[in-house]
Image (tube, rainbow, N blue to C red; front, side, top):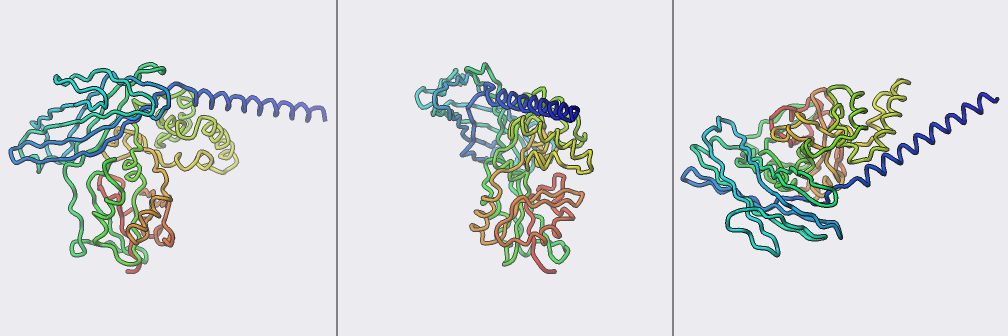
Length: 394
């Protein structure tokens, strides 16, 4: 009896210590200094010229949602990268950044002077790029514009790295006459090729452009989770992630092919759900695995744990970033279904025959979707077919 009492007291001390450790980790994570500034892109346009010169321009907005903190932006520059289907050597890119501050005029020499973004305020910058070269319309595909900027404030000086993808070429939508359907298990499927998607795209506009002319009553339109996530801006360059000691240690236990097997990959999950939940899921997951129940960590850590794609896990140029899972999928599919008048689903499919429907609008046949998508008609390479149209019947 005495031994049992001692064991119970020891167990209580262990649980108390573990609870205190979780509280300390969570408090340290939430109270760490960070910049509240957010950067978004809008109004980007591509203007092909007839003289071998294209112009690309748009606006980036820097917003400060904090009520009191004032943040300096001492530096902002852009780093453009061209992607294409041919040798791009010889193409010249000239860049120009023009501040559009609400209370200070831009300098005529193009110098970016340090600017303070006050609480609940914002500022903008106009980015203009000129592309010069031969056969641009044949060679160009996508422009990846990285915005390299600094934040300076109570947290110190942070180097920020955001990026906006600008499509220079768009895929030709299929028509009923040009569509080649694939036979499935009690259904037909049609992968739909699109341009490379990014934050400048709206899911509704993409579905209307590439799928609307083909839709018939009973069809279900699926969109892959990663393309939806990048349209929501849910991708992060690893340079923007500071792995904690917890992430560096826990990531070692995951399978090398897991997106959580790197410190940055696991830290991206910690940043979303908190260190306390990740550590608890990690400990309980190991215990569950010891008693023959694998996958406990992913069930306890939440849906985002399975949806993170680490570096190399996505189509270029997103292969250089960590792509998170989409958010608000249930609301999005219902809105898209009402807009299009057809069933819509967000799915996660791989080449191993695993099909997970993250969200489906009301009335979707989930069994049909699983049968139709099990062969992974969209592929996992660079097919650029994030949409798959599922039609019941043969």
